Image 1: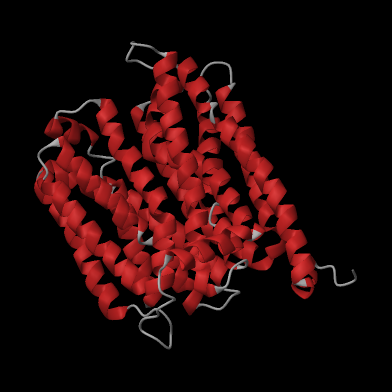
Image 2: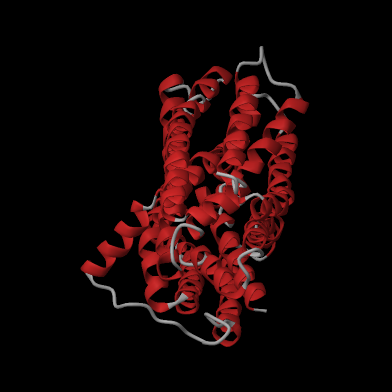
Length: 421
């Protein structure tokens, strides 16, 4: 029950995060803004989300996941209500900033609750199921919001959306407990000394850094396509129809949902090979993108389908970073470590979203119509992030394994299967 309420609250947070995706034209007309100003909504949400991960982790370690999740849900409800009645661009920007803030206060709480309520062997698969279920919120935001905007109008549509988080807040308040034995938990008081100590201890562990770089390297490609650049890339860069572009983005979400439980089973059964699985997935993403970007002319439909499937798998693969953090940190600083790791993918996504926009403008100066060649150049910026990420994963996987062997030799033998060593 606790997990069901928590994961539903997370699904609603993703719903609110994605609720603007189908309202771009309506927002442009309502606020009389340009495409660049419209893109600012997405960039600000990513920036706030990424920037708040460590503070939210510290708050969860101090006040418990229930209190922080309740606060985040209330913030989301108020932010969406503010967005509903906003009639100027600055008011709308302020509302979306608070949507990002409330969104940031949800996922870390869900992971902490999973670690408190499930056995260690079940945690990886429950975590991997949680991520894809949350992403269903992105699908749920499409058809209902499109219908609502066209039927009951902007203000009513977003007020109804806000009301869903009011219901979620009541459910969190009544039904969620931080631990089976306690309704609420409290950690050590927040002070600069305690904050520095907790963050330094979490970051010092090579397992946390390995988790950060795994999250950094696997997530940004799917996030970039799903939140902003996927539709224009397929339509302008690969000359697909708008209908097929929407189908491709839907297939990507389906791949996320299907891959999550499979990866969760693998992680639970083969803990020693978690980073190996990440490396294999990243190299697969790099290979398929290379075929797409350098295919003569437009890539065939079957190859674009392969692309969104493989890129979609990168979404739940990023969750492996959290499992690496879980086995590298005690529970009293687990949320702080999770916040650090969760910054990785969203920082990379933010860099990529901005870089693609800048490169597109530079490659198509003043034209207003981006060419396939411009998209090839812009999307190739991913190789920079993949290169950095792969090097760091390789570095810290060796450091993490050496640390485990030196400090926890029995666990090292059990995980590596080297009882003879």
